[in-house]
Length: 244
Image (cartoon, rainbow, N blue to C red; front, side):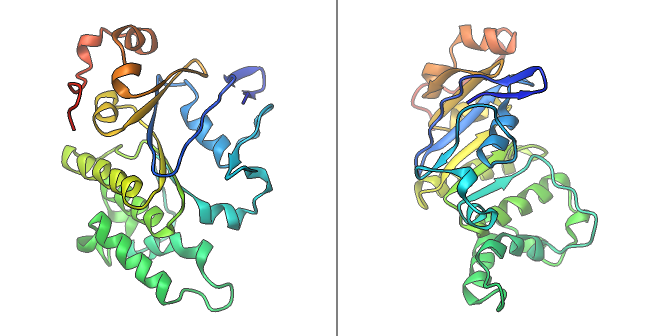
């Protein structure tokens, strides 16, 4: 795959696959093309060469409704211009599944309730999403994606604005979604140590290309950390091999 904005090359020769139940972190310096790659996968960015396949079918051939039933997206930040309660936001994840005439049915309401419980939002019910902290709002958006029950979950900095406890809870939730529900999870991460601890596979982007792809211990070598991030690897506290 190749993506360019005008004369600026953003992605070059990207070849990436994601299997059901796989938990993959997308790492790289600012401007490496991580968020652009997510946009290509969802069909929101028009790449110049290559294609994105979902179960062997080009994403471009899916209707937007059909694609929304298969792929859920959690953006880095969500802004709302109108009042919306937490449970109403979570219920938006069911729109791709709702009957066009009957609206939400018992199965939809059950999925919303299950997502709220799974993410631990019971204490926020009835609250206006706009009045939540950035971290609480991020959790509500994550619950919306869980309610969507998609096969693929794409996340752009899912732990942004979260305190340490909530960061760990979100990472454990992503592990459960992959391991128990078979969801294919691809998350853009800036916290290298957090990604190395919780993700079984990391894909390291550098200047729009995949520099390395595999288990964290094999990908995140001192030389690569120095090359990509331009810092002394001693400042990156990676977990010991076999830690969980």
